[in-house]
Image (cartoon, rainbow, N blue to C red; front, top):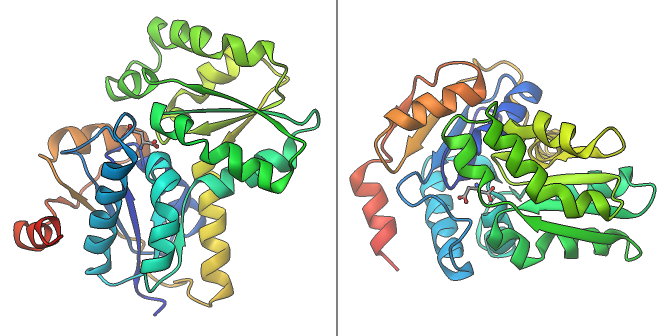
Length: 274
Ligand code: DGL
């Protein structure tokens, strides 16, 4: 069981920010990453489609024989965590609860900001998760839809990133938050601009980092940590691999070598079976 892989899925390449953290904490694990690059972005799709895609991705990973499933995508976590936890025969972790826990642990003024895709923000999943932990906390949310294409275009150091951060974060800054949750896979790439815009008084929470800790904790508790493996990462993407390799390599800081198509037959079977 310890030798089985950890499965992770995301709408595309952004989930590599989560994989990077998992790899740091669990360096001997075999990680199988599924990026739905043909259908990205999920952030402006309906809850029904996001849930359908999540089930398909999870089923594909299950056919690979995995011991834990990580939903790296915030938008998918917002809608599909409950159903996947119910349907999957293995533990399933989403990014929203770990990010919320960390934010609640750090706020002193009980005012937390959350940024994410339109669909994640509209779902109010972070609001619910934070208020469940402490009903006295006020949550201030803001959708930042242009952050994703800014990262995907490699413009994180460009003036446009700073301008958009100022525009999106202005209201949050005024609300007096002392913690901000980056509730989208891509935002950690913009962390330094976000930090600079909000100033020193606001602590930034990276949901993916907290999720990696939770994954480590779950595997540890079940004695499922691979302590001797080579630490291989395999990637399956639903569209051509070139831009995924380029962008993913940039985010991870090392080349992505094993990038493949999920395999027509398997994937089609899953895709058209419902
Ligand atoms: N992975 C998505 C998320 O974390 C961002 C990209 C998208 O919109 O699909 O919400």
